[in-house]
Length: 470
Image (cartoon, rainbow, N blue to C red; front, side, top):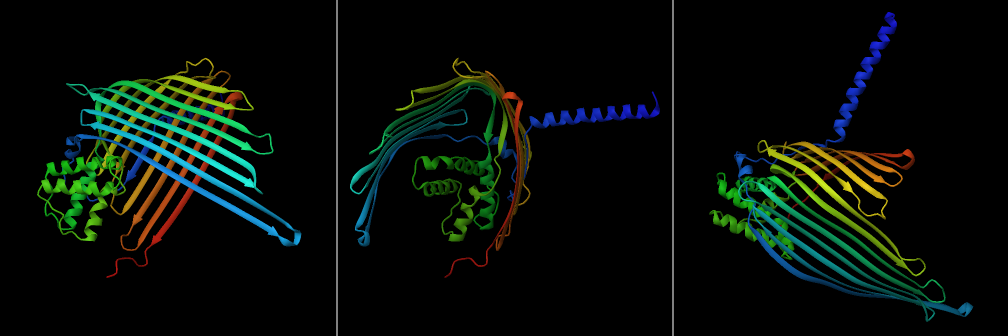
């Protein structure tokens, strides 16, 4: 082999080796989702162990209420033309009625969670129109939408082994009847769509949402700025505030004026630790209320791994006067293995990762779908930089596979999001965002569709003058 041929051979080997390395890197990226984010709040010198010591508070509530609406609208138009001895008139009326009962139940503590959320929405709609005093068109529709969500999670004693169960049911029934005078288009349409999910699982470990702890620490810092306290709160006081902030999402399920009752309970919690908010002015009140609503990242602490087995059943039923009844159904048995880990390295940074493998066969003979599988993975690092500069970056991947009678369907997606916000409290706020999305679909006859989307936005808000006038 000549020197020139040998160089070409070595060059090809190097290229081949680099290509293999590139393929391996891309393959690793496909199953990994990375997130990088940054923001800070001035969290003081609180011991970061406050995250690991946090426990979910005891919460019990149940509520049942009804919402109803009644509406009527009419429209009449008349037209006359004396020059042509002609005239016309039209009349349209619309009647609407809806009734929506809802039941919500929650029983939760650090060892058990039982949740039931049931909503039923029924509505009636009637349209009537006539022209020149003669019946012209009539439409009657009734709609029923049922949604049931349930979660049961129980930790066994001793240890951190747990059992879990969840269910989700949604049924939509629509009945429509249209009558058109002087035509043959009078028709009836009825549809029913159902989606039923159920899963049962077992696992080990515990992953807690510790975002309320950050809200409590930030609330402490703001009280210092207002001279309501001179020193850091006790660890117990931080924990009590965090538990109260964790309940904030449930107040709208019970109260119409949920914000009022939430802050009343916050004040009771502070009073129990010898702190009062009496005499605080309007600015101070608004400054404290911002604490739980600041832009921040979801924080979690712990390790959780588990296995779930479940089912998903879907059916679609349609009936029309012209066409025969049509039924489409699908019953899929799904298994899921997952691992989630997250740890607060300190008050300003978080490391997290997760892996999930799911899929299973379709047992419905009439369905063309035979099986489906999904792989989802993520690794992320969050860092809080400053309370006036908020920077976030996210890279998300998904990979899915479905097997049908005559073809296979594959989908791969990648989304990169970058955003930044810079706040100058007196006058200027600037926002910048960039989004890149790539989607690739492969289906029958080896057809491939790919979509590549870029979106860049930049905006400014400048406050020329603002404030209260006295």
